[in-house]
Image (cartoon, rainbow, N blue to C red; front, side, top):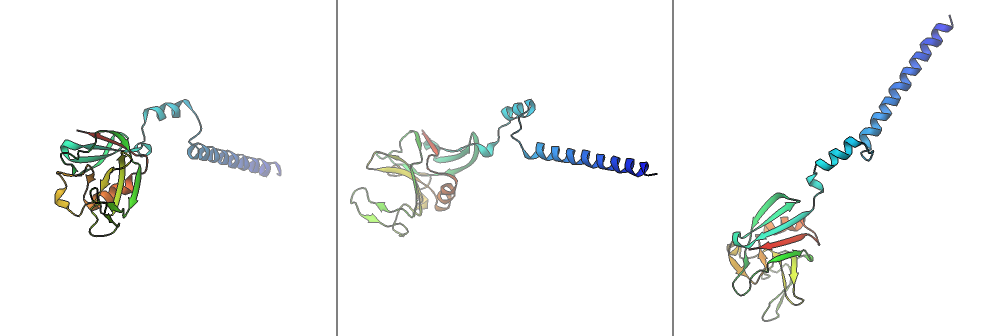
Length: 182
Protein backbone atom coordinates (compact mmCIF):
# COMPACT_ATOMS: atom_id res chain seq x y z
CA UNK A 1 0.00 0.00 0.00
CA UNK A 2 2.90 2.32 0.56
CA UNK A 3 3.85 1.85 -3.13
CA UNK A 4 0.73 3.61 -4.50
CA UNK A 5 1.16 6.84 -2.54
CA UNK A 6 4.85 6.99 -3.58
CA UNK A 7 3.95 6.54 -7.28
CA UNK A 8 1.27 9.19 -6.98
CA UNK A 9 3.65 11.50 -5.13
CA UNK A 10 6.43 10.90 -7.72
CA UNK A 11 4.01 11.54 -10.56
CA UNK A 12 2.77 14.76 -8.97
CA UNK A 13 6.33 15.97 -8.29
CA UNK A 14 7.39 15.19 -11.87
CA UNK A 15 4.43 17.19 -13.20
CA UNK A 16 5.34 20.14 -10.99
CA UNK A 17 8.97 20.05 -12.18
CA UNK A 18 7.89 19.91 -15.85
CA UNK A 19 5.43 22.80 -15.38
CA UNK A 20 8.00 24.86 -13.47
CA UNK A 21 10.64 24.17 -16.13
CA UNK A 22 8.26 25.12 -18.93
CA UNK A 23 7.27 28.28 -17.08
CA UNK A 24 10.92 29.21 -16.44
CA UNK A 25 11.82 28.56 -20.08
CA UNK A 26 8.87 30.66 -21.24
CA UNK A 27 9.99 33.53 -18.97
CA UNK A 28 13.55 33.30 -20.26
CA UNK A 29 12.44 33.35 -23.89
CA UNK A 30 9.97 36.21 -23.50
CA UNK A 31 11.99 38.41 -21.14
CA UNK A 32 15.41 38.00 -22.75
CA UNK A 33 15.23 39.30 -26.32
CA UNK A 34 19.01 39.09 -26.58
CA UNK A 35 18.78 35.33 -27.09
CA UNK A 36 19.93 34.82 -30.63
CA UNK A 37 18.00 32.55 -32.94
CA UNK A 38 17.89 32.56 -36.74
CA UNK A 39 14.26 33.68 -36.54
CA UNK A 40 14.93 36.68 -34.29
CA UNK A 41 17.94 37.77 -36.39
CA UNK A 42 15.93 37.77 -39.60
CA UNK A 43 12.99 39.49 -37.99
CA UNK A 44 15.26 42.22 -36.58
CA UNK A 45 16.69 42.96 -40.02
CA UNK A 46 13.33 43.27 -41.72
CA UNK A 47 11.50 45.24 -39.04
CA UNK A 48 12.36 48.89 -38.41
CA UNK A 49 11.39 50.26 -35.02
CA UNK A 50 10.68 53.94 -35.66
CA UNK A 51 10.99 54.83 -31.96
CA UNK A 52 14.72 54.04 -32.12
CA UNK A 53 15.26 56.22 -35.21
CA UNK A 54 16.92 59.60 -34.71
CA UNK A 55 15.07 62.91 -34.97
CA UNK A 56 16.05 65.20 -37.86
CA UNK A 57 14.76 68.45 -39.32
CA UNK A 58 14.25 69.57 -42.91
CA UNK A 59 13.63 73.23 -43.69
CA UNK A 60 12.02 73.87 -47.08
CA UNK A 61 12.53 77.58 -47.69
CA UNK A 62 10.20 77.87 -50.71
CA UNK A 63 7.35 76.27 -48.76
CA UNK A 64 8.12 78.21 -45.57
CA UNK A 65 8.00 75.10 -43.42
CA UNK A 66 10.16 72.92 -41.23
CA UNK A 67 9.42 69.22 -41.06
CA UNK A 68 10.24 67.09 -38.02
CA UNK A 69 11.19 63.51 -38.92
CA UNK A 70 11.92 60.42 -36.88
CA UNK A 71 14.17 58.51 -39.26
CA UNK A 72 12.35 58.83 -42.59
CA UNK A 73 8.90 59.10 -41.01
CA UNK A 74 7.34 62.58 -41.04
CA UNK A 75 6.14 63.46 -37.55
CA UNK A 76 4.95 67.06 -37.96
CA UNK A 77 5.47 70.19 -40.02
CA UNK A 78 5.48 73.77 -38.80
CA UNK A 79 5.03 77.07 -40.67
CA UNK A 80 8.07 79.35 -40.50
CA UNK A 81 9.45 82.72 -41.57
CA UNK A 82 12.81 82.67 -43.37
CA UNK A 83 15.57 85.15 -44.18
CA UNK A 84 14.62 88.18 -46.25
CA UNK A 85 16.57 89.29 -49.36
CA UNK A 86 20.12 90.20 -48.37
CA UNK A 87 19.79 88.08 -45.20
CA UNK A 88 18.92 84.71 -46.76
CA UNK A 89 18.83 81.58 -44.62
CA UNK A 90 21.86 79.45 -45.59
CA UNK A 91 21.25 76.25 -47.56
CA UNK A 92 23.04 73.03 -46.63
CA UNK A 93 23.43 70.35 -44.00
CA UNK A 94 23.88 71.49 -40.43
CA UNK A 95 23.19 70.32 -36.91
CA UNK A 96 21.80 71.86 -33.75
CA UNK A 97 24.76 73.56 -32.07
CA UNK A 98 23.10 75.07 -29.00
CA UNK A 99 19.74 75.41 -27.30
CA UNK A 100 18.73 78.12 -24.85
CA UNK A 101 15.62 79.04 -22.91
CA UNK A 102 15.06 82.79 -22.57
CA UNK A 103 17.97 83.75 -24.86
CA UNK A 104 19.50 87.22 -24.77
CA UNK A 105 19.29 89.04 -28.11
CA UNK A 106 22.07 91.25 -29.41
CA UNK A 107 20.96 93.79 -32.01
CA UNK A 108 23.07 93.09 -35.14
CA UNK A 109 23.62 96.82 -35.89
CA UNK A 110 23.69 98.61 -32.53
CA UNK A 111 24.97 95.82 -30.27
CA UNK A 112 22.12 96.57 -27.84
CA UNK A 113 21.47 93.61 -25.54
CA UNK A 114 17.89 92.66 -24.74
CA UNK A 115 17.63 90.09 -21.94
CA UNK A 116 15.74 86.83 -22.26
CA UNK A 117 12.15 87.01 -21.07
CA UNK A 118 11.80 90.70 -22.00
CA UNK A 119 8.72 91.49 -24.12
CA UNK A 120 11.09 93.52 -26.35
CA UNK A 121 13.23 90.44 -27.09
CA UNK A 122 12.51 89.36 -30.71
CA UNK A 123 13.72 85.79 -30.07
CA UNK A 124 10.88 84.76 -27.81
CA UNK A 125 11.52 82.20 -25.08
CA UNK A 126 13.38 79.50 -27.04
CA UNK A 127 16.48 79.42 -29.24
CA UNK A 128 17.75 76.44 -31.29
CA UNK A 129 20.98 77.53 -33.02
CA UNK A 130 22.23 75.56 -36.05
CA UNK A 131 24.59 77.88 -38.00
CA UNK A 132 27.33 80.34 -37.15
CA UNK A 133 30.19 82.06 -38.92
CA UNK A 134 31.83 82.73 -35.57
CA UNK A 135 30.19 86.14 -35.21
CA UNK A 136 26.59 85.76 -36.30
CA UNK A 137 24.18 82.97 -35.48
CA UNK A 138 21.14 81.51 -37.23
CA UNK A 139 18.58 79.36 -35.53
CA UNK A 140 14.95 78.66 -34.76
CA UNK A 141 13.22 81.03 -32.38
CA UNK A 142 9.83 82.42 -31.46
CA UNK A 143 8.63 85.87 -32.43
CA UNK A 144 6.56 88.71 -31.00
CA UNK A 145 5.41 89.29 -34.62
CA UNK A 146 3.37 86.19 -35.49
CA UNK A 147 2.17 87.86 -38.71
CA UNK A 148 5.73 87.45 -40.08
CA UNK A 149 5.48 83.64 -40.05
CA UNK A 150 5.08 82.44 -43.63
CA UNK A 151 7.16 85.29 -45.06
CA UNK A 152 10.78 86.10 -45.89
CA UNK A 153 11.16 88.49 -42.98
CA UNK A 154 14.11 87.62 -40.73
CA UNK A 155 17.87 88.24 -40.67
CA UNK A 156 18.35 84.61 -41.77
CA UNK A 157 16.76 82.93 -38.77
CA UNK A 158 13.79 80.60 -38.74
CA UNK A 159 10.96 82.38 -36.97
CA UNK A 160 8.20 80.23 -35.57
CA UNK A 161 5.01 80.68 -33.61
CA UNK A 162 5.98 80.67 -29.93
CA UNK A 163 4.05 77.49 -29.11
CA UNK A 164 5.57 75.71 -32.13
CA UNK A 165 9.18 76.54 -31.26
CA UNK A 166 8.55 75.43 -27.68
CA UNK A 167 7.22 72.10 -28.96
CA UNK A 168 10.19 71.72 -31.32
CA UNK A 169 12.61 72.62 -28.49
CA UNK A 170 11.28 69.65 -26.52
CA UNK A 171 11.82 67.27 -29.46
CA UNK A 172 15.39 68.07 -30.56
CA UNK A 173 18.77 68.13 -28.89
CA UNK A 174 22.30 69.35 -29.61
CA UNK A 175 23.54 67.33 -32.59
CA UNK A 176 20.12 66.92 -34.26
CA UNK A 177 20.66 67.14 -38.05
CA UNK A 178 19.14 70.16 -39.82
CA UNK A 179 18.90 70.18 -43.62
CA UNK A 180 17.99 73.41 -45.39
CA UNK A 181 16.81 73.23 -49.02
CA UNK A 182 15.37 75.78 -51.38
